[in-house]
Length: 252
Image (cartoon, rainbow, N blue to C red; front, top):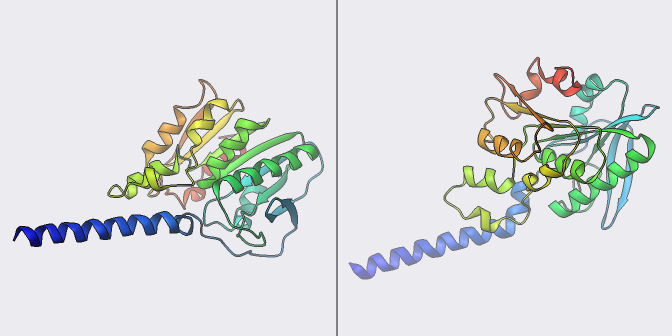
């Protein structure tokens, strides 16, 4: 009986270790869900080491622009109408992550953060007043950009403090904090952000636990970040709130 129990436990340990190994090597396919390109709007390209990334553009003359970093499964063109409504006078630049739409290469945290900084630099050279907007995964990217570049304002939609924190909440039975390579630790960058920052949080978010957004809020310096909780909406439906566009615009 003891031998059978030992054998069973050893088998379960092997299966668990094998599952953890599979998760470690396949994790990027579980983090990034490349979306195909939708529509035929204006697109620029940005040459980067190891890839050429695409940027959807809504041109406008003048000093003001907004850059947008989307979620991990988002075709960013879908957000163009609401961004155009929120920022009618600003030029718009929406980054297609590596491997998404017309961008080549493979996504990773280091690559996406570098691409985002390069896009900001291009936009800032044309328009000195840049609002940085990020949604979900893109919120972590937006925090990183705003910590290193002179953003005019930052808007974070369904943000979180770290990807590991979200993964640990959903997969508590796995050592995800040890396994993750792409960590998106926005909490590390938040204290360096000086621009006024709005956190748009879905009250019924089923993906990002409220505690993870609250943890991010606490990392900003006093007076920098403002919490806005939108009632009756979830992670993927937050833009349906009547408060969403005014808050995105900065008039909520």
